[in-house]
Length: 331
Image (cartoon, rainbow, N blue to C red; front, side, top):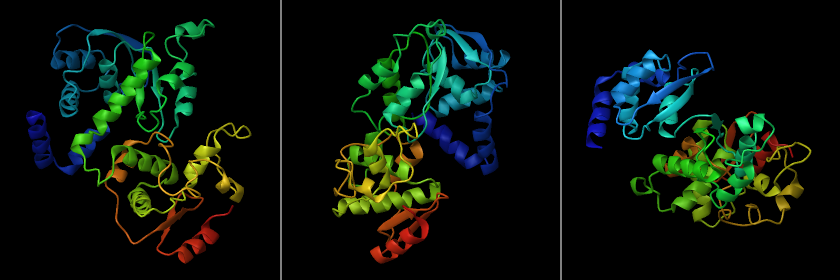
């Protein structure tokens, strides 16, 4: 850990900002535009240097040196697993490293920030494993099992790209997602600002669904936390959308245009009728929203409303807020 920290400090001091930007850019470059998987083997006891060299010579990454640097900075050096892999050539370096942490590859699952568990389950149902290609259901990983294994974990299923094999079960996938969350948000290493981790995640889930622009998120997080600590109703439309559930006419989980009657729904998730936080997170927030809930911006604002373009408009008084609602929001 000390070596990693020392290396990071050295990099921040010695590498110009432009070089650091290029580092991040290079991490996301695919090895190739070809999606065809290539067989790749990691032998037991092989060093990161050897693995990186073989990946580069196989055309799966662009730079062995960059791979070694990334695994050191991300603390992944000891996590790469021995085994036989089929690696698509169009993965970027970070995806290749993640694949080598989680075993042999068959499919890649990408879960979007702000999805609820049901949306993740729907994505799982689209997996085209060999069994499904033959018209049979794969019993190892399916939507029903995922919903069962992830019950009570809304908010903690970290949205990311995951690599699954034919041996991966719903329990395995949920464990990967929980571990990913715990690696990103270490409870003993962050300042919870007097809140519990559950409260932070709950607030982050609302921010994720309520706010489109990154610069608005910490301000909205600050407003929500201030309302919560003062016993106010949060009045967050996203919680109403969650309570309304699946919309058959739109074939989706999040009703876009709420009407006044929606705000009267009888649900503990109705933050217009019930002060404080909803019973649990309403979605699975990404790292950006989690970080804004951990580091909110303190302002004099108590109200906010988002227009059709995703711009958030803030106000101090209820009168100003009502003017913004009339100006920017049509129900």
